[in-house]
Image (cartoon, rainbow, N blue to C red; front, side, top):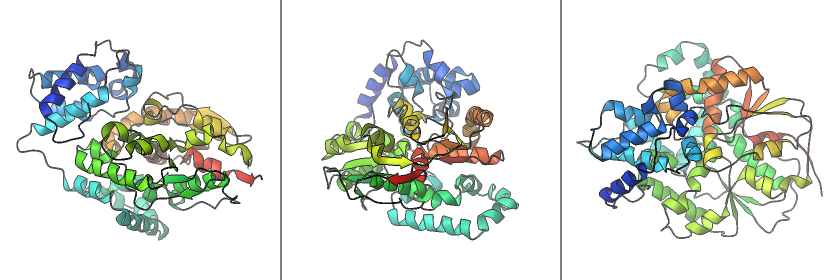
Length: 435
């Protein structure tokens, strides 16, 4: 059961969560699919181990401790365990309440650090986001980034309490922050249905090229694309940090912004946002028009695949090797399977490879790569080893966090492999729009 209303009696949710923990038969099938258990071989780092800890906490058999908190906090919420579980145990709900319960029992209540408070506030301020994006561009284009990365300045930043060195390493190349070329031609809108594009809070800073490529390719398919100005963060980061009130406000604001034109299809490109947006109806059922929002919501890869939108588009050949990474949220929550492969197969001569470690999390896990960098980097190593073995020219992934985390890992190993969203590659290769 999700904690979406602070007024709900915590005891009621506690009893429901205890009942959910009892659905786990401790078969251990989940352990083979859990990245934290694979890394540590510690039962407490497995889904059933965490369920057992939470069950003991809620029943009063044990008290919380730093060790227990660490085991719960290490979970990446990749949800692979839920996909494989024969008993359909709602693990993510159990873990969410377990974390909340521990925080609620602290005296005095735990307070967010200033970095966390600042970050959660910033991502809901659209104008501040735009200013930050401009500053990052200036930092890169002025040559300051190159200077920082080639000198000892970055090492000095490691000592700062803000963790600036860690954040600096995640800044993508300037090309990701620049708009790609416009589509070669824009046919007149020949669809009755228009598109509203969800941009989110971080993509305008770190991934403008995917947003622009999404808009370009949809317009090349004949759709009219609108970007609602009043949209905001999807609320996922707030919810994961226990700020359900702000998460609800984000949901309300987005639903209001996107249902002003109820016939418009709502398209997102970042699957991290998509997982949160697709849960609005379940987690915020009382918000007006939430059902309209949910019915119109679609991932751009799925939309382009299902609508046969690319049938009138020709693509230039590309004699390169591309590797497809399937993020956890795409597989386990949004059920996005082979859409990227299907769409990229439209590009002649492209050599497509699927990541074999497709059931293993890359370690990004939203803000986990920032709050637990060593843990995230250790989990990432398996995927990096496979990428190195395949030696692709390009790696594609539809999750922005995964893209930034994988890109930083490849850069740390001195590898010059482009990492991008599949729609960026598709948009690059558009050669002709037919009548």
